[in-house]
Image 1: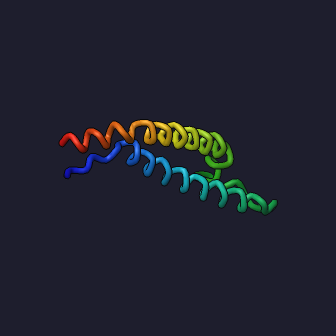
Image 2: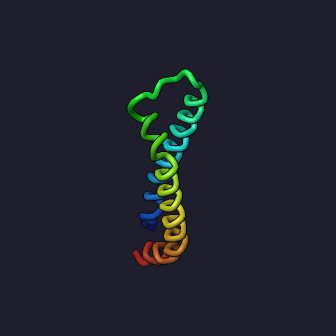
Image 3: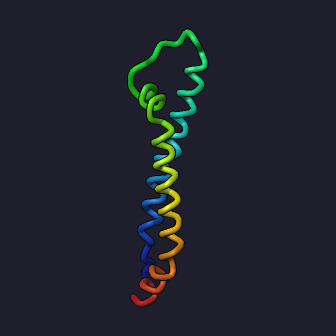
Length: 84
């Protein structure tokens, strides 16, 4: 029997990894900015400081939508695999 993979699962893996990396970067940025003597560093630290919460919120929203889509379409992809 040929197994057809639900494409929403693949998207969930990609967005989940992006969310995990963003959460780690945001956490590191938060701890680095606890030191009052640290200078504002350009790059990822500044990006996370200015837009980190929005990026995390968007990724969390995508995870929510993709999870609902994966669960909702699981029967469809299972039946499609059984037909082949």
